[in-house]
Length: 148
Ligand code: RB5
Image (cartoon, rainbow, N blue to C red; front, side):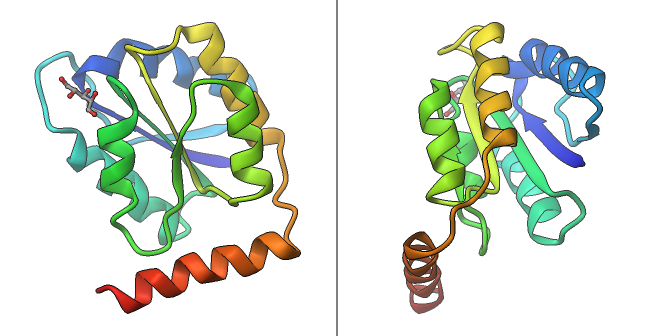
């Protein structure tokens, strides 16, 4: 499975640890940067990963900034993206089962690396449940189409 990853300068160190973790666990990681601690703007990386997801270059995306908020907001502006900021595993799991999130975001200033790994595991192993949840996702897509 191929996963896109993107981050800002605040999250560079955590991104490196996560790339190593994912690679060790058999995932193919496509890194969109940034790859230094030099100050940069998180929307750039949120958009790059979002495009890789909607273009089906990858099956899923992971975004990290200081809080996970800014970078997920940027990604959510791309049509078809459902990015959720998760700071604990339960929300990450439910965000896939109920909301069919295609991007997981978290904050390098908010959680530690071990919590980040648990969140990623829950999210990647969860399956979308469909059914009544699909109808609600379709409603979200309608909002997206109506408000261009
Ligand atoms: C950068 O200082 C910080 O604003 C960014 O990493 C992120 O937390 C934004 O949401």
